[in-house]
Length: 269
Image (cartoon, rainbow, N blue to C red; front, side, top):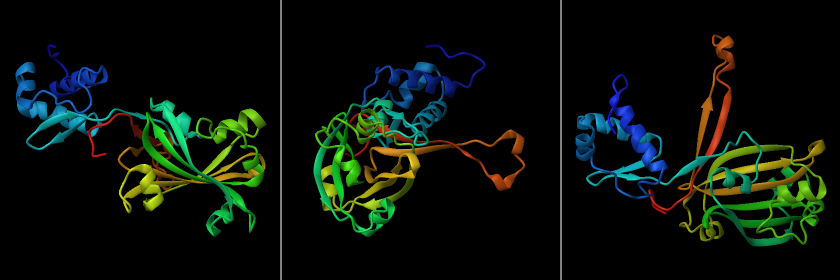
């Protein structure tokens, strides 16, 4: 490849490397040519090459190890939290094959905070625990509580292959219309750590979600624990040009996206 005139050379180099990575010329964890080799190939200084590599590192395409060089990072794809989706849709959008393992399914009296969210008082609900996988690798652990009315509709269904969304909407015409989310951090307890293959006490990303149907009826409350090395969130804000001086309105959210990794390598697993 010959560099064009009129465009910054470091941008052209990063574009070329990005294309090579996306076309799988370089595989995950494969070492890229050294700064010296790239400099010689494109007849540019190492400073220019370094700027190109910094761009790719900031975009998540590569990771760098001091004294060793630059390596191809795990491939990622994004799916927007601003769109109401289920796990299978998230994984499909990320280019991953979704699967699940049911770890627990039984009725119980829910913890007080869950009962409040579901408005079930002292009534029993069904608790469903599932390990969620992308391409066979643990991505998340779900603990879901459902009022018994909705829980009974799931009987006879394969909850390792079918999602709650899909069953309720296609079989019973009960759409999930709205979700209330809370994102925080949590430390893995023994059960969650064992399922996700992490150390007990390791920091996880926790998303709590209350899903509602018509009439704002609570369908389920869920706590999803994500491995923090396999998902990150990116957001985009956009200011309305017509109201750019109205500081009190801030910058509205345009996208808020979980970014999933779909191969091994690049980070400690």
